[in-house]
Length: 308
Image 1 (tube, rainbow, N blue to C red):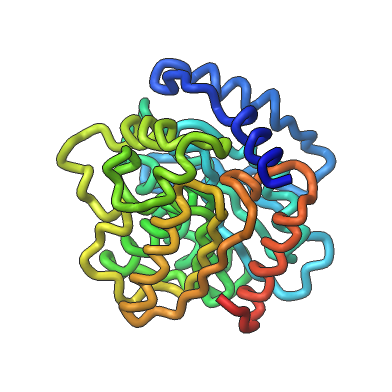
Image 2: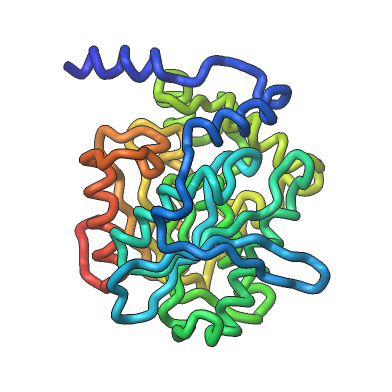
């Protein structure tokens, strides 16, 4: 059975195409693959105005929310693809499963808007909602940052940026199979890049291509806001939940980030999803992994203790 599963995953793995040339096509494909029907969801489109910029956000409210609690969500897609439309079904499910209001941020994408454009937009939305909590009728202590893959990278970077700038600090962050390092080539220090980098849906080459499109200037490649694991100081960070997937190239760097956060005195929970591959969180149907994932997330949000 395990051999069959590996063959199936290899067949489903992204072809070795040049994402640097085809990212625009891939964006269009995502819109077709992830359709949504606005009337079906209790959602509201809004814009966060920062200086002269208008940052689109989509607000998802659960049906029977008793306590106003908020998840600020940064979507995945390698900083290059994905948007609030392709993640609408994911966010609607998130609001329903967690009983939190979900704010999905439509941040600027690379390569048209390379680092640090996207992270700055994510930061400004998180700051605005945290400092003007009257907008959502909730307390700052009830706001949690969350992101998957590149979005997990952005959530971690926003938390670092918030500490450094001293304007606010999120109380919690949830990082789902986050990218935290800069090198995803065979010379990476993390075994999961080599062990899982070819036959498990997302390839290491694809990750590196995304990173190259996102971080275009050589002087930015050691910036901890681009690769949080490079931060020299990881103290004073939010309570953190990190969820990784067993057969994900990003597994080891995500867990390494959690370990370093813990060593720096932060409260951290690391949960590895057994037999899972990258992308399970955004699947349209309820898999065993997704059901378990929300159990872990809800336990974390409720302050329960889980084995790590």
